Image 1 (tube, one colour):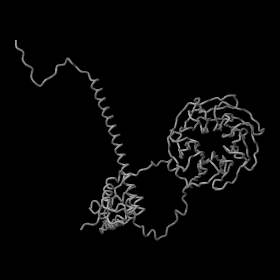
Image 2 (spheres, rainbow, N blue to C red; image 1 turned 60 degrees about the vertical axis):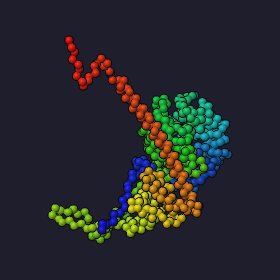
Image 3 (cartoon, rainbow, N blue to C red; image 1 turned 45 degrees about the vertical axis):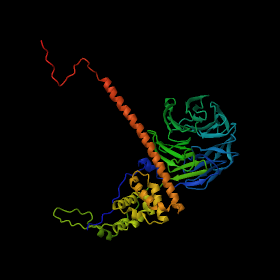
Image 4 (cartoon, helix red, strand yellow; image 1 turned 90 degrees about the horizontal axis):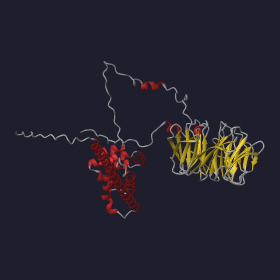
Length: 526
């Protein structure tokens, strides 16, 4: 009698995203920490100096969090209405913010009361930032104006009013202390030089602009508005380089990685997309539970912080790099060398090699199949870890039972709980192309066996109704695919006919050339 052969498990190609260096890099974050704020989080900004504290603007407060703190280490609450745009200065000592009442306030990071209050805007101020010389502040307001403020004197220096709608975003140049950019709901992006009275450059985004970002070199500008992220070449007079449309809803925030080689965008579609700045293709993405309003990345990429419309602050910390310590390379006991001796020995030419028979260990379902316990074998592969993580094993056992013609016996005699597990497995995997041919036969057998008990168990009746709906949807889907296939066949046939016709037209035809016949020509008589 031949020995038992284990069930052959068919191998299928693994489905999923391609593993790249970016995938490995951006997946090295821990489980996120979530903190509930008082309202929608409109701005997150990291301190440029160590420690990496970050300011979160939400409702009428600005909370400052430490790198690992889950409670605010500092709170600025001297706002009469909703606060906007809390931003650090480059030295991390001052923080500026706008407000719904139009007042721009300047705070010392170690104090509570405002050092300066700048009055001049008539409506809410959503955008504030410091110039690179650290002594001036830029602000943009819903009164369509952009202003420059002098910090030592607390006075307004310049006022620009070229936009025709709300000014909701902007940024300053890190290289040129006189250069700053504003984005407006009038679809335009304007570049200003404080030494001139008017804007020096205007670009049309064609959508209300929600965020702008200037590269550290100052040569490229990124704008976000609507579903589009656009990159402009500042050195070529604001020429559009690329327009990206990878989001399904409005893009609300932009930021750069510490190396400047990756661009991040957050959107109301609950996704954060990461682009390569070499070819502007998406290299990775994050999913979140709610629409994203603000996004920030720590200076060393150690943290990624996202603010959402539901007031939840999502913080992800990077996992520490694995270090090889003395614990991992500890000395082994001398007995270890005795047990592994000869493992790497290579036989010589005159040696006689005697192989030791390897004992084969059978899986649980194989042991049951070997003992012809088909029903228990099917139960073994329908257990939770196996049927969820490796459904191909369950399908392979079903196929083996079908080959043995004992599938009907294995499916029969099941109680409500066992039948519910079987139907749940069919509902999940029936339309899988890999398993369809076998599972359709199994479903047919289940309906034949348990058809007479319809109406006796509400749970089983509900599962059978789900199975019917699933099959109806799949049939409709297949019919639509056949219609599409027919259309494609017609198009391909038309293209082939056109190609043959064109070749026939291009080929010259000699009408004067006599047609050669296989019959000999008749002889002429004199």
